[in-house]
Image (cartoon, rainbow, N blue to C red; front, side, top):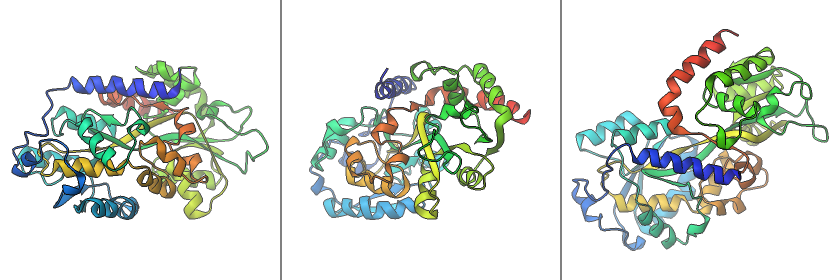
Length: 381
């Protein structure tokens, strides 16, 4: 099966499960006067006014967004973007439950947190047609949007992946190099110590892929089968890494010749630290995403939809892809991604075509027991 089709089917399945979690709250029944005034549907984007409150995870990406997203949005609409950080699910819950919602848009960093927020009815049901109207007013082409971009209660952003990173000092260009994350197990062609993340998340899927499980057969995960495959790898594991920077350092220091890695890390090492010997392989990598959501009772929903529509423009996605390795879910962004960034961006077409999309619902329901089983295995090594 084509991996883009696999991606779509996976997200469609998740969406149907999410929709069953409970009765969604209409964006027009917020109990907030300003929100109710804006609840009639999309308007001319240039007629918007006032401000919109955006809550993010913070960090260097905010500086990029200020230039490529927020300032152009204000120039286009006249709406001032007021930002805060960090993203915090407990604060979102407190705002919604108190009826005093400050944020119009907030970032949710993981699929598990997103599903928790949906289950607890903290989010506005995402109005795709409303979002699309603003996107097209801004000149966006809806046919360029990935079908899985819009979820039931938000929009996916900054898709990321766990992939393979290898040391080109050990496996130089012109000689055989790893081509898949499953080459962690190929110690005959690519000898040397390996490093993997210390948690079950992603490791179980990668182990099953190495055991011949296809992307469209991955879920529900067979945890014991994955553990059995990890047993084969165990003699070659030098260490388990925790923080993303550690995975880079372990390879740089020669402690392992290859490691799993979050895709933005080797790009940062190349662009910021001039480390030019880190190769990557995407095949059988595992992709997930963060979310932008509109809290239930958000005071400015129309400005929120317009702001999120602006985020999905190709030039906004390319700005972050070219600087930190994470883009948006607009396929037209591909044409604006610099050649040196393309090997590291999860949403760049050739990379996305060969990854498996994480089933967030499975992990939400089974993650605790899976982590307990993996931790027991890891501590026994």
